[in-house]
Amino acid sequence: MTPLEVTDEQARERVASSRRVVVKVGSSSLTSADGGHLDLDRLRGVVDALAGRVALGAQVVLVSSGAIAAGLGPLALPSRPRDLATQQAAASVGQGALVAAYDQAFRRHGLTVGQVLLTADDTTRRTHYTNARRTLDRLLTLGILPVINENDTVATSEIRFGDNDRLAALVAHLVGADALLLLTDVDALYTDKPGRPGARRIPVVRGREELDAVDVSARGSRVGTGGMQTKVEAASIAGAAGITAMLASAADVAPALAGEDVGTVFVPAQRRRAPRTWWLQHATTSRGELVVDAGAVTALTQRGKSLLPAGIVEVRGSFVDGDPVDVVGPDGTVLGRGLSNYGSVELPLMLGRSTKEIAADLGPEYEREVIHRDHLALHPR
Image 1 (cartoon, rainbow, N blue to C red):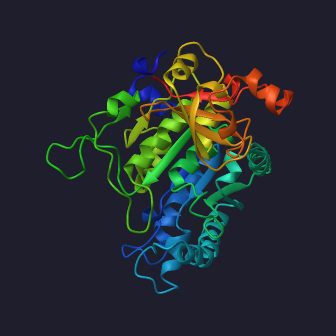
Image 2 (cartoon, rainbow, N blue to C red):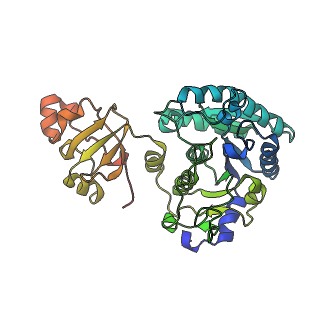
Image 3 (spheres, one colour):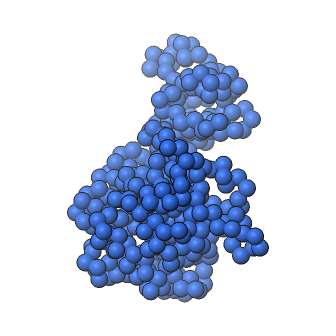
């Protein structure tokens, strides 16, 4: 069955019948109207619904924003700070309050939570990725409900996820989830900004092309970082891994988990991308760029070849061997991402030269590709 053949009801049933589900809740859904402190009634409402799902035999992983927002009140800050140091300070104060609130709320249902703080490196570097997966699998096996957040207290601007929507999609792949539920203060995806005349709820999305005419550029709330665009991108990341995603209001968490007609459900791709290709495209952060000529573009995109030094015309950024880098065509189009066999210091000496010529000058260990085709994920064309 192709995504176009999947009905609205069938897509929602995938969420309702999922045995392992990742639920992400945003800051605006957990905090007071002024954004200065946690709204415990809202938090308990989400917890009650998740506990009910666990009681039915499902495993739940919660990705929760709110640490920075929870720290605003105690620090007497009127809104989310812009500078990184103050964000980290607010997160340090707020993270304890957030997890304590979850611990107390879940204990009312006889459930124990385990706090897991992640940085981008934990999903972009393979060794960290494997360790994170092992930890989460063990927590679930032990009957513990993981509560995950980005480690805002130590993350820097260079390695941050940027929002917890993408983090939730990566976690869904990490734990092999069947479904991803993104909870927000908007009840669904609409054809236009909610409240505008003629704006209609979109109940189901079967492909990214269906969103070409939809404006998803709205920014997040004043206590959060993610807007509608980040949620659509998260759903796309999950869909590429074969995971059904759903967007709904935090107030509708229970009916959303039950597969009722609320929110917007995103039908996943019928053909999953290979795990390594998916990881390269979605879970890595580019450390630099390799600009290639037209001949290299043809070799990579039409003939399935590896990237050789002869086809590279420029090296941008600072990276070492093994780092992910973007491959850019002569017109500035990003063709894909791959793992470079060389660092940015040595590559400029090799540009435009054949591997045999380079090996003759620098040694036989240099007679290899810059990016092997098995370590290159090209964007769909």
